[in-house]
Length: 278
Image 1 (tube, helix red, strand yellow):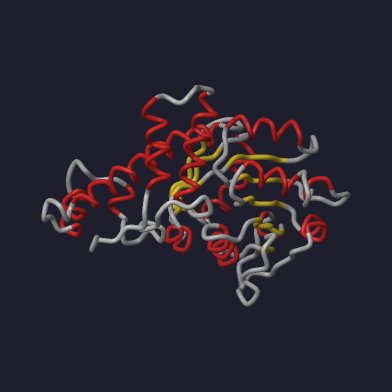
Image 2 (cartoon, rainbow, N blue to C red; image 1 turned 135 degrees about the vertical axis):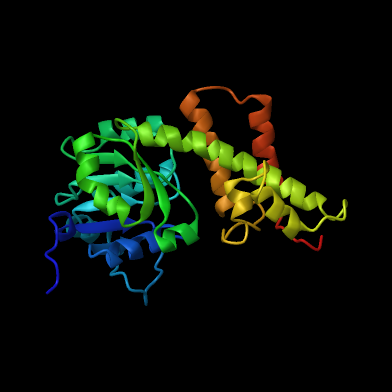
């Protein structure tokens, strides 16, 4: 006999943004017994396991909760209130979970702009596509405590570390701080890997020793598991997303870039695809 579904599992979870993170997250939610509906402005994953709805009006009336994994603030605005207008439809979802990395202030702005009755939490996650595929993401949650408790099983279907950090915007505040450090580690690890040839050091051995000593970082320790680890900079890829994340941090602290901030952004933009042969 199959176990009865929980009230949350009876709801339809719409996942908007079926990219490298969003699609495997949708698959994990479905595998946990939830009803899932995917949505993207690009027609992709047509032969995959997730039911799809590309029409925003139909998507809006078919979902109870929307998990937004789109790229940035502009795409969230377009999804919710702009061209797609998911939350301007007569029939619309009851709740929105913003998992994109944006500034904390944007979350509060969205609260003011969404219909008053909309349930909203910020739920940025950390990991990489391989963590999304195996359900080991780390979630940083902000929102009403009762709502976060009720929706905790949904986050647990995608992540192994779930942190309830406070009221709306708290999760995003932690995420932009975390991602500033992560972006810095990408630049520094790639710098030393590029220097290996000049010093006649094995990059593989260096990565191993760093992972066992003071040079360990999330990026370096998982260099071979991270899908985008060898990418060079493009505004459209994950290194470009790191640039966006640094800017989200600066927007959150409402500060002009310090010299080290400007240098970090410059170094990210100058990253070339990693080639151990030089």
